[in-house]
Length: 391
Image 1: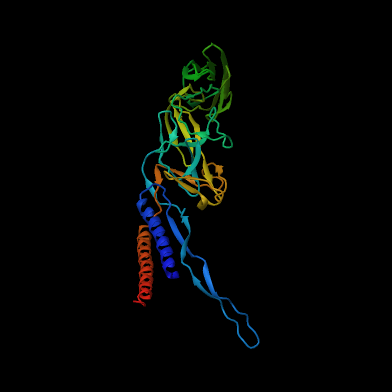
Image 2: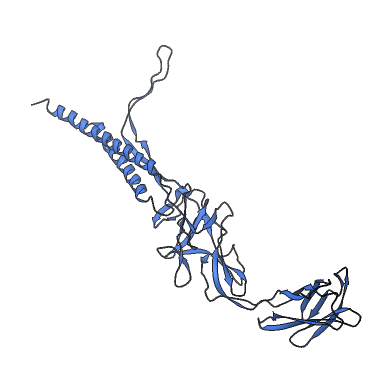
């Protein structure tokens, strides 16, 4: 039989594969974070009909004569270039700006994906649309351990922020230099002990018969400490601090000008316990909780993985990949570190399919298929001519 018949068949198979790959790319033009593929061809073995001849004194060298036996698919490569950004406004939608993959656990198997369309399930775990659980590091007592064991990213809706005992208070404002002797001003502020219980700190200011201002701090237990405040040109030069029941009261910001009395306890550094009121995801992958007491505490951090050869990953469906012997092992790190990209919250990565290129590939594959089909029909006509030599 003619070799051209089998060359044509191999060409049909190869261009059918190209059509399949191109069709899949076009079908996934709107798939989140889809990476397009391309087909590479190579020739198959060639039959040597005449070997090469070496040059001699009287005869020149000759090249080998070979007849090719068709075409085959050398490989199908994945294009991991960055897709465009699609803003969604959803706080749980994440896009990797740069290299890297999200790590997810699907039925006990660790997979990798760039599709960041996530949401929280009823257990508070961050999951993909098909239920794979996003992996990262959960905080312990507000501390993140990026080198620890990976686990589910969980939003603890019942989390409570620990109280902060008051250790300092700041007094600001004006003590009038023209106030009558005997004037007394009392200012109160709520402070907190180690259990988060409220306690009242009272600071009183009085001016004696000699025009000297003094300050007395009293806590809820009745413990009192007093100091005389001295001023030069309206600024505190002495007696600018009090300590009562472990709370340091800073009086250095008080002034002594003529005019109205505006002195007050402007700040204290304690807080009660708080409940979770809201959360946010940052570009560093940290899930931060905002609590009713004003605290902002890191709750978890999303982990990213990178590979020496991402093209060696195996597609598993659902926009996920699994490593192979040629992709190398995953290198796990935090977003924006170790060669991984930062995260963009409220956005998704679009498919990197170029429709203009894909439709051109469709034409190329179709014409290639038609040309190889013509090889078969032409070879058939030659065979028919041969069989009709004897009638």
